[in-house]
Image (cartoon, rainbow, N blue to C red; front, side, top):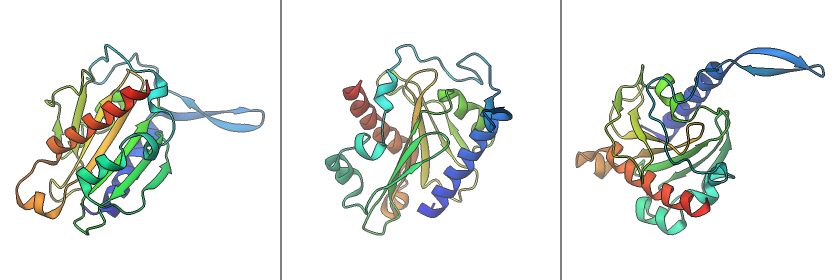
Length: 206
């Protein structure tokens, strides 16, 4: 999957998340604001419970500043282009692309706005995913799932979502390079490794 297609897929996911979390509006001081309609107890939709939640401070700020170090990125991608930070309906994201032209890249997002954690992924992505991987080993004790988006033509890109509490999660979208694809590497298993590194960095902030 190209970086453009990956970002488009993320945009679709963000739009779906917004629709499922806010469908009604009411005026406040003359301004229409979203009214959350998801009142189901967490976790739901089949998502596992997070037994030892991290504090919200672990996901504060931009992933560009806290998810991965320059040394770690060099190990995963080699030299990278300038990271691209975004603020989305779910929370902040950071996109790193390999400068080698191999289509490899990492997109990390912090889901800090929906208040639904891993349950949102089970609700929105499981029914339509091309590939759904709920057999991943927990990441340092925290539940994780992986999925390949239905719009992909290969298994180059896998999204790993990790619940750090019942209300909060982070995601790692890994696009593997051409040589890894040719070697039959599994983007979901490799993505889990990247997500594990991110978890180590987040725990250091907690």
